[in-house]
Image 1: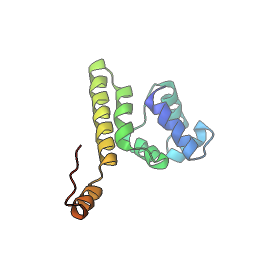
Image 2: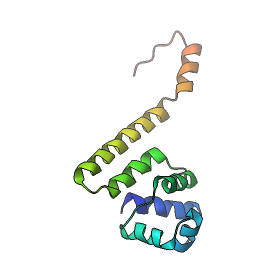
Image 3: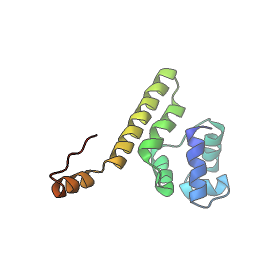
Image 4: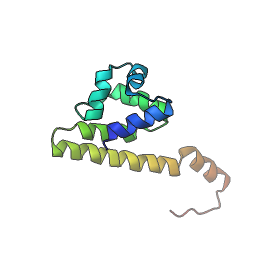
Length: 117
């Protein structure tokens, strides 16, 4: 399954939408656009991906490079987008594990503690 289809299906579930026609209306695109996404003939634009991510609570940094990789016309371009997706995943994980505000407050309150990473 392509990244486009995975995100589209997550969007439909999150929005309680049961048909692709209702999905198209919800996203402000034509029924044919959603049909082309399903058939792999086309992919949603970045603004539509952003709407789907917002509705599902998913990270745009996670989905945008993956969908662009699906859209890529050459293996080399696909590889670049997938490397970007990996970098975004690492960054997201790092930020999630080590939020900036947690570090600042823990250092201020525990100045005698040694942290080893």
